[in-house]
Length: 337
Image 1 (tube, rainbow, N blue to C red):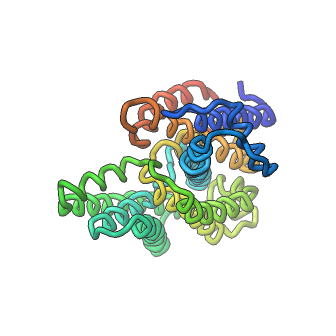
Image 2 (image 1 turned 45 degrees about the horizontal axis):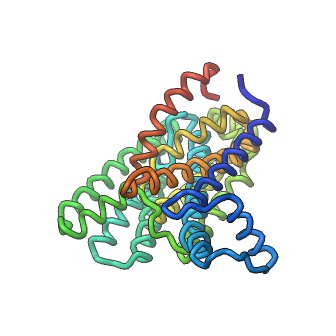
Image 3 (image 1 turned 90 degrees about the vertical axis):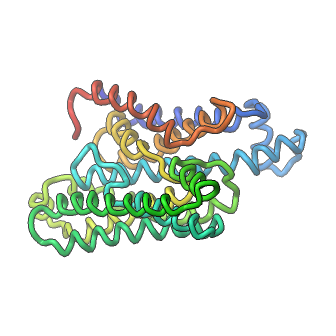
């Protein structure tokens, strides 16, 4: 039985609040809710918190930026996956369907191979994701036979395979003692070492892309229909499809550039959001963003606290996402809509 949209949103916000409290409180330096409240009141009122300086350093300089980055990346991947699943009318679509993740990965491994700095590597990943999707869209638009949505998906699969071969070639050329481990670690996904300076390059593209998708939420309902029906409603499907693809690619590329390859978030979370609030994009997109941010935040908290060394995010999202996705499919007896 599907809960009402108000109940679904309340569940999503509640889960997000719990995830934020756990992320700030858990770690090798535990911090209780009372201390968090005092720090928050100190930041709002300007009064001294009375807590040791090391507590403030942990919250504002170490965990704070990492929590915000996890929220932004998770929300971006979830909202992009939601948009792509509706646009391509396929429940198995994820944000990397058009090659954004593969293009960003190729850009990043090239940056590591050329021994560039961290910012340059992230910039190369961001540009690589945009260029990859641009190439997919250009090739797909040039092929004017058949269903344009199907042509885009097939082109994305082909270009993604080519980019994967490029990644493998660069890894084969890389120094096996320094460059190859760095490439492997980046490809598995991580938010370790996230600093305040990393938030602005992530925040801008994510906010712009999400704002565009939310603004188009009513038209996306019509774009979920077959091509002929959407056109019969008066929609210019070509420009609208391009706007959705560009916005979803922008947030995906920014997330991959900041955190590496993180799978399953854009596949699993849209299904959970759809189960909670239904298929209407006016409710679905905000709920998916809330759930995506909370989900990745929980994964990141587990990654840094569950073992003696930090676990890559991509491994945990697959281990947790697979059984959860199977359970979600078994519970959604009404099918995907």
